[in-house]
Image 1 (cartoon, helix red, strand yellow):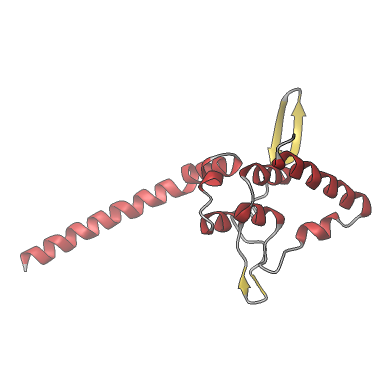
Image 2: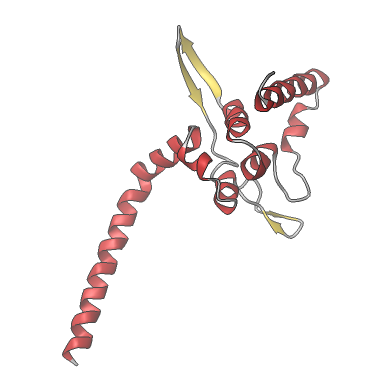
Length: 150
């Protein structure tokens, strides 16, 4: 018997192919449920890691291929930045927000999302964190000195 996730991936791919053939794919991919969740957000909230990774990999576009090597591009709109500002009174959430809200450590520690987080940490967040950390240490030291001399 096949694993349930394999069956789900195959079924999703079949439905996606059918939507492309009938011309409703683009509209359907923008659709959200009553909680304002896309298919990827729903997989992040309640699905399996395998299904999440399958949907996530479908967002990546192959830019070029040379033999077994391929360059893939991923637009982060909707992944770490919400697609819309607000809708129907609910604040729109990006996929990373959903992953954190639902405490999906398996998604944060494995697969493509981890690579994005690691890259963003190295390029942007690490230096900002260190600057703020040392500023807080200096401030705490000054405050300690001022309060102890009174």
